Image (cartoon, rainbow, N blue to C red; front, side, top):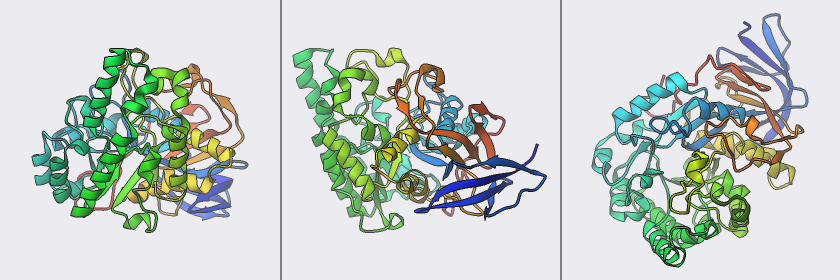
Length: 454
């Protein structure tokens, strides 16, 4: 097998520019960018008519491994990710068991090393039960700590609803603190009001009213205030409201920001008008809200108040979704189609290719201080995707790779397609064909004492 790959005559989207060049890949890295002559020992891939992006880095997924693997696992969901151009991901701690200790975190890394086709990192979970252990730990060794999803295990686990716990964490934590920002007390009050009227079978169209703008805004405002007080490094996950976007700044470079945020692609794609057709399939926490919120989120993404795009990929079985309101589980699979969604916005003239690459590739690498990823640069890992911007296809059950076997995007026709995906220099996905013999790597990041570095 030829270990050196030459991508010829491609259009590169990188660091705010679009250019035409060849790219030489060898030993896992980008060796050269420019006009490169082919050699007999090179595997040549024709990039004519295609765009070359850095591999997407998804900063928030729920791949369900360990303990919830009937929904998805680190093999199936990383495979779906790669088909969608995602070459690296950060997974959340709400597995079974919850990842609340260094020992369980190491075990999860061990599982990923055997199963994940994409590069991986994991948040350490933090809640009221382990806060004292967390603040005694050198948290700089972790890519971040998070409470996301842990509220499913037990009420009161949201940091945003516990200012004393949050203040203790902000005063002592040396890593990024990524939080789910909703006030559970406001949500519970709204739940009771609608339960009195509708019983257990509340129409899902009321979900964004129950998980309201007020509940999100108040929680985010308080978290930002406490983070500023302590100089903490705060990241607000999956922003959903136009109101919240005004709490974030865009007057300093991302490298200098101590308070950052993200938008998940479904909050840009769907609005509350879609509940009538899709029902519980688009029940997420925080909720999909109004068209005004959707447009406000896109505006904040474009003007850099929002820093990155994620998927919050959260597969459940159809049986788990198609329940009455309180029983239906929140979350849905998105990682295979996130780039396609963003490229549809490009096709509509709403965002540039350069901005898509900035928010999905460059900025996640910057925000999480990843080593040699997120850019098309000589000496960087060859995490790359070749995209055809004029290759229509329709999402059907037959072409889904999610273990759960469904998507809220079924029936959607996209104009663009990922044709090839390279992970650490290996051509893992090639026009529907797979090479899954190579596994992804633990993502190194720039700190002094990183247990997970190779």
